[in-house]
Length: 319
View 1: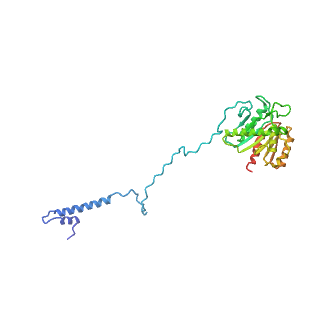
View 2: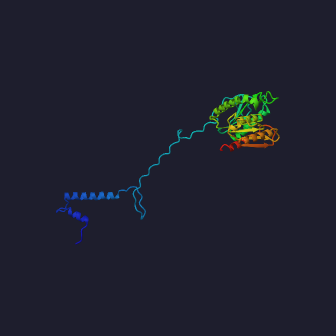
View 3: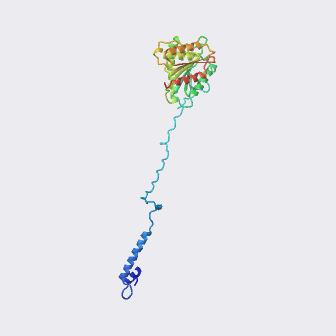
């Protein structure tokens, strides 16, 4: 006789002798069916949202949920790079003077200045040749134009103070000039240098910082005064220049001074060639670096002199 199915066995076991299921058997069957349903629901429940491994690949540990990236901090006024300081820091009130031509600024009634487009810590103190009085003159226009163009091209600041009446050579008593030697130098040089220092401080206030490098140069009468200051240690400078002038003799102070680069420029059609070469000989004898340049010019300030002077001075800045 064949085996009965599981459902048939359950039905037979639950029936009484009269053929009807007893109450206990009915409860037992209901409990068994509930357990089977619960197991089916568990097997059909969705697993975690993990993609199945490819065929033949081992199933590794579950990867952690990705951590969201931290937001990029916003650029605020506190984190933004600082703005560059204004250049120049402040300009003084406009000064009305006949001494300064258009294109250069007036520091005061007797001093002009030039500032380049970008900040600089280098200053040129330029001493003019003799200049006649009056609102306009070729001498004044020429040297201020030369200095302004050359200084801006070199990226340096420039001061152009006015000389004193009564110091020009004979026949030019009313012209502005400089004490080029002898008693005039002894009497006027130190007060003039003190005035230069005061004007330098005023320009430093405008620029917003002190100048760390200073050059002193001049043309004609100013060249002779610049040479006298260099030979006698009358002013502190990082380099000197004499254009269209600059004679001088060895002085007792010269051997005690630290050598400075000295540029000497003059025109082939000028009369100062001999004194310019003599100055070069004196300086070289004391161990000063010297450059002498002769150009096909006459007398007076020229841009090429300053261009060459700036290049020569800069050659010695890193030495």
